[in-house]
Length: 470
Image (cartoon, rainbow, N blue to C red; front, side):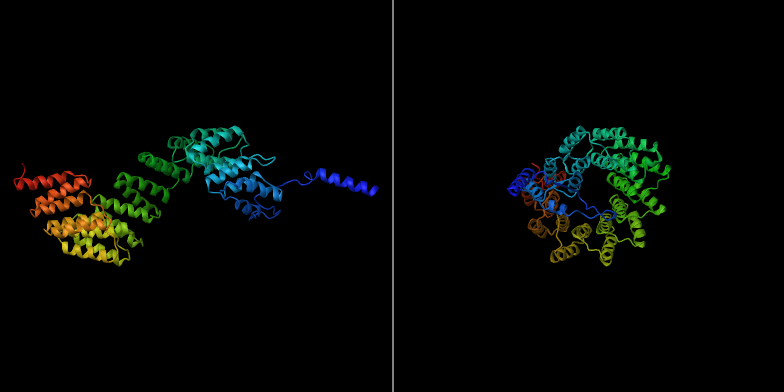
């Protein structure tokens, strides 16, 4: 009887306290390796949780079932680490919301900071407001990461709040913090931050990254003159510009067509022993040629070629095109042959430049040879290619061939633009086929191709010759 009573008591006790005796384990993203510090071993729970991120409507239910089955709760560190492993915005947001529903759980600052970079600008602002209201303890790594996210999004007010919060928490902004604030989208604020850094503690003095970031912002805002002033300020602070510094300024000057400044920067790089990247050389060569300074462009080209620079297709093509347009066709053809000997494959733009030069010089038959070569070797023609040939054939009164090419270009997927129409119209007029030229003009209207001053000039001139100006 006594045994039966004890058995019943045990059964009742066991039945009453089963849930309490099975607490959930709080899991971390890395295994506790005790004395082993590095490299840390990823917890096996991480890939298993990530495997449940299928984006389905049942994702949250699956996470619940998984955690109940294995009696686990994800720690804030686990959630933060997992968010940094997710690239899909919707999945990350859903996981963040689900994690907050775990028993006895609340998000840490790192969780919020890990989610923020994945949000779009409108959602980011709301999330930051929520974070500010949460008043979570601030840490320096989290502050640095948050500063980088806020600066990239251009949230100035939130950046200022972060700086005040760091000050109130006795956290001193590091160089990394300041460099995050010197952001390209916040030029005016960045300049103020850089000025404050210059007069601050030695540990937060602006470095090369600080200046390069500010230079990028100034150039992006079209304030190139201020960018050059910043370059000189760097030099006064004994911070030597690097490849990134010069490339930022060269690209800005190229966009503005300021070739003299580009040349100065290029020569300065050489004098200081800074590596001139291939892209910079291409900008210098192409920029000079586009301004008709082909001899200077070739000098830079040859100088860099002697140093082992392998010129890209664009550099060769630009020089060929400039020589051809300036009437130096033989030099253009020599450079074209050199291009092939150097192992650089000409493309349709290169062949277009050669064909255009030949047509302009009246060497239409040679141009047709190149055209047939391109057709036979799968080099796609473009509108400029066809326009040059149509114009060249029209000028030597081979209008029937020009008309065939005019129709053929449509079959090759090239747009019949106003230049093509004008070239054929001019050829028809030169052969006295004014009625056909007028018919082409009407077709031009029907096709919705815009007539230019040259269109009317061609027709009016020929009509006057034919006494048909009534």
